[in-house]
Image 1 (cartoon, rainbow, N blue to C red):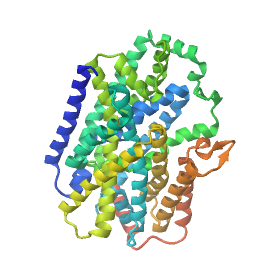
Image 2 (cartoon, rainbow, N blue to C red):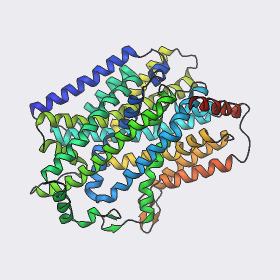
Image 3 (cartoon, rainbow, N blue to C red):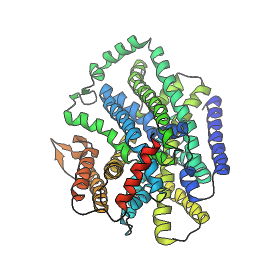
Image 4 (cartoon, rainbow, N blue to C red):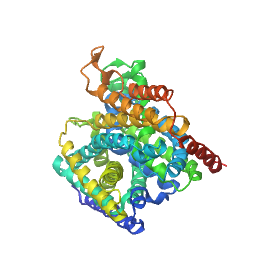
Length: 504
């Protein structure tokens, strides 16, 4: 590895650890401070930390890889994500910020569900926590896999070494600084990703002789690559079900705990529009950059005799071939930024759930804040260890791991979050039923030995579609049978009044 690359990466690691130490000194030593940053995030940090934790390694590896293999048809996923993220800012962000504070100052999503429906049985909290631990373990594993691939393909190190180095740095600053460190590092990492996803596609197109020449090169490889309604990898036209499945990625946003926790932590509802403008601009530019990198990266690789790469490493390949080692190191840091920003957020949300929703709720109800913070830090280490263990199965693609976890959260929590914020008479039974039906539908769709037109269910239709629809129907039907518990509707009315005040 070139000296310049080592210098760039070394500086990046030092900055991340330094931010973790700074955040440690700024964070109150209580649970709300460690898990939610005291609800004091500014709009810019909220937007970029939500974006960076959302996009993860799939933005720089999975999505360009899909574009590299399938062509423009992979762009439907991007369209769905942009629409979903915008709807999340409009529908969920302001209302969740207000309601979680009214719902007994809830600091985790399971905590919010329990308080929103006055669930004294704690069943809602436990089931929600189980969903978080199961699906986030898969999700975190995808980030660790991306780290292993990065170190193996770029640095000549073993895949296993990459797993440990990536995880060790993330665990270090997450352990020390908690939510504030995760959010601040995500902000810096989001900036690095943004710059990188502008630089790499522009330089790639220039190397190909300009946009016109790049388009001609793609047509020469396979005209189907420029057909948004045909998958170039299979030479088949997309079906309506296929397009709906890709657009349906956007439904997942409503239920992603590591994203919507940022809305719970933003300083004020009045900051949400600013955060939305920053976040959506960042997202649109970054996704376009990732798509161009994958498509024109294929043209560049094809022009190089004898070169063959893993499609998910196209960004890595271009960053090392087309740039000076110092800049190449910065671009590799962008991939690490994407990977580590998501891993840190997922580790923190999972540890928050284990600490607040299991340890405090069932083992140590009278635990002190200091004890709970220690338990949270121990949970970070345990979850990271499990993620590394799962990541040893290197055959799983990043996009597949992410899509499974994304669907699980989107179907289990998405309808529940939306209805809880808009449906006054929603009941605890409806909340529990919707969450269970959504999660089980996704698991059934992925693992059931059934086929449609010779394809597994998950290949025929993305599992979030049936999961989200069935969970929504379950909530609507069960809410017809029974009434909310005493006081629940009064709290909802108080929430509506508070919302009206905040939006004036």
